[in-house]
Length: 285
Ligand SMILES: [Zn+2]
Image (cartoon, rainbow, N blue to C red; front, side, top):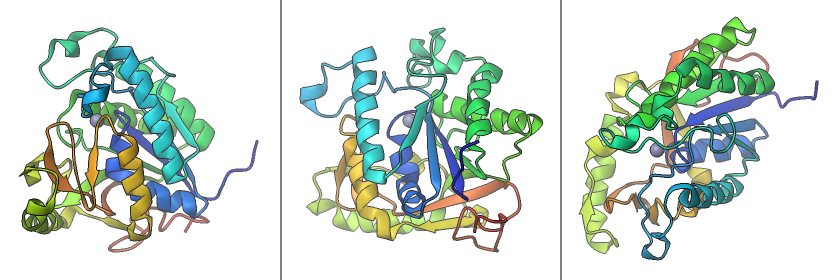
């Protein structure tokens, strides 16, 4: 067996861009520290709305292929070499926003058999043997069918991998503490006149917002803010970055968090308020 770095982090996301928005600073930090960072993305986001007018001709498979290139560029910015598509490229297609007829397409991720999809992820888990897995909460952070499905598949894979001999010690969900979100939006409203965005999003649009008590872990990614920002900008079809803010295709400004927050949902915390996802794991922290 080839030798593995002592610390191994696995992230499961729905579309290219979610990893950079939610975990870009965390991924850059651990990659820089020599941890093995593995990203599994479940679809290529073929139904995403394209922001730059010059790229709006890209739809379906052509957009998916383009977004694969954006993901590659983003991973270069974060220093992450190991990124994969669940079941291989094209295995699962983007399901589109909730309620669209695309949700019923048999090829879409929302229609995937959870155990089968989890099986592909178990293969990755047994190869990488991560001590930490990061994904969304059961609402997928904000309700997109592919995000909910990514959550279900990741959590099922955690169970199946444990049965197969690799119980992942710690599982986290992506979070934003409510008070941090409120403060960031207050700054955003003050800065908005100087930004290229005309309107602000609202805090409820931000995935994973919860009351502060639920936050177990805070990863200060200040030193990797530039990498996170560059990775987000690499997803140019989906994200418009401007300084400490960004907008998605709805053009509503929101804060770009360089400190990233998590809720430990499986495993024992290493500290009262963790500042390292690997804390408490023997030989890893
Ligand atoms: Zn997404």
